[in-house]
Image 1 (cartoon, rainbow, N blue to C red):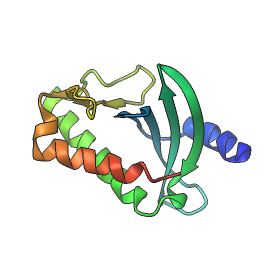
Image 2: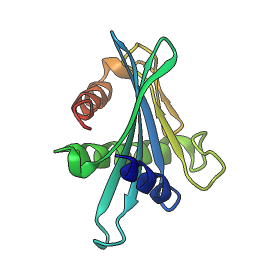
Image 3: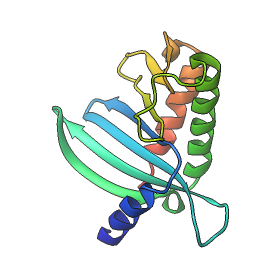
Length: 148
């Protein structure tokens, strides 16, 4: 487990955008940090690293790393979320958007199941939870909640 965390941290510096999203539940907030990268040993195959942070009363209760190889179906869900975020960012923010963190990587924040509007790739989606897109995003997050 420690080796996986160290590998994920080292791998993170060489990767494409980091996607961060949170899901509120009755037991607290679960925050997922997903790094999309390419595995050097297997050519252009995408490897998805998860850092799952569980919050309770605004304090970190649990943190763990895992990857898409331990999450059946998770890689497809994350690729879809990443593609949707990139598409919305291109369409809605004119290219630069507010999702950048100044490091050459873009940060996508997704908040929603607690009733807050979605902010995906710097594009604010009002009332997304009552739309087909919001339903799709919530279903995607539900699938990811079984990962790790």
